[in-house]
Length: 289
Image 1 (cartoon, helix red, strand yellow):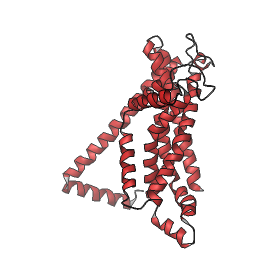
Image 2 (cartoon, one colour):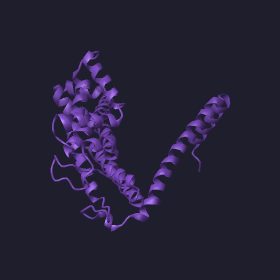
Image 3 (tube, one colour):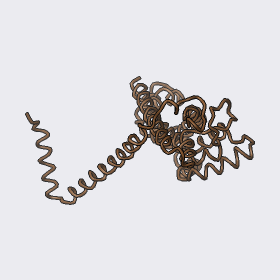
Image 4 (cartoon, rainbow, N blue to C red):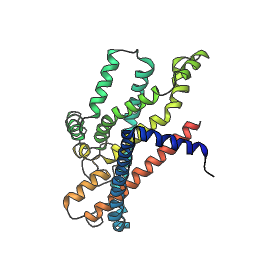
């Protein structure tokens, strides 16, 4: 049986579209844009899978990289190291800055406006500029050399504005009634932020972290100038290393390992999807607590 409510709703929509043909045209354009976006995504993912899956082999996952096996395992491990290290630097600072802007700073404060303008400006800077800055400051001025630490600090600066802005928006989305209720029960500002506001904003905060992880995993230009391209597992913070994205760039530039490049792209795609799935799962678990 058809739902009479849904039938009535569709009739109302049809009448509205007859009265306003522009609304129907706008709906068609929006649907077309959504289909084009979905089709482009499916085409890219499908092309990578078709080209890469047949070239996956056990030799690509050997511990040591050689010119014969072109192993991606060192780059995969280094990608995880780089991601964790960059998040350790960026997430506390970004969340802390967002908490100050939304919960402690007075409205109309010039410092707040300056910080927001700075964050928006940093978000639009190309990654190659970050790589040049990291090369001059971390690698040269601080004498860290081409290392895991130099690359992680550079990536932390890159994703810091993203995490700060998404966290700020997530905190602003928490209703003021939550804060007022907590204050009414006698809780201080610190307890209110820690026990009421932050738990409610965790899904939005993790969304920013997920976006930051995506940028870290897919970054290559900045890391070439700061972390180097050594195809070995980093055993220390000051070891030169390469991530999966840099590994893809290096072997594709040689022109001899195109098949292995596609296989590496498949692994990189799987890593990104797995990280996003785990982050989404964690967000759902934490939001239910």
